[in-house]
Length: 205
Image (cartoon, rainbow, N blue to C red; front, side, top):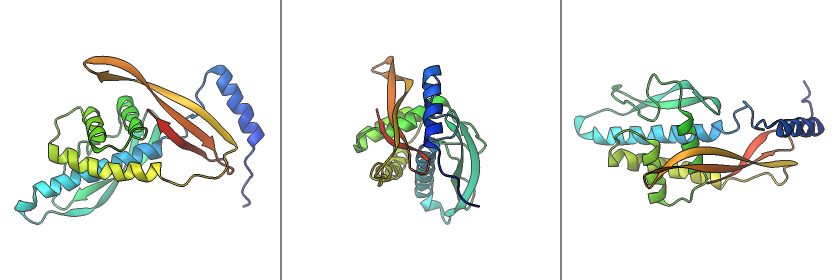
């Protein structure tokens, strides 16, 4: 079947109507979910790295493939491939074994990672805010070591030479800074490619 060409005029009309009515342009299509997926999977891998390292003295536990689970977030649904260990002693905290929903607060904090510089200490401090539970220094380091390359790869990816439609959006969320809760914004540049694919071009925090 021949692929139907993208109708730019219809998209512009629809976008204009959404803007006039105050509706977000992102919709429920999950334009941000690949970014959430990238960080969550990297974090899970880091957690298992730390778990296996801590248990080395005990013997032969090792990686044992991945299991797929569907996650629902405030920005859309997506599949996550969670790593497993041979003796099934790994209990992930990023997304627990039976967890299927992540909070809006976690969504927003993960997205803000993409707008930060790649200072190791800055990323690690931000991760401490994401994990509102006790986490060992070893696990935090292992997670950071996995997440930084994932974010760097996304930031350095090659973009299309032309995007016919580009717009700016913002997500507002609450953060605790110096003991005070403040409202911050994540600014994102979104675009539509020549094939009609919505993409996140950049994120700024």
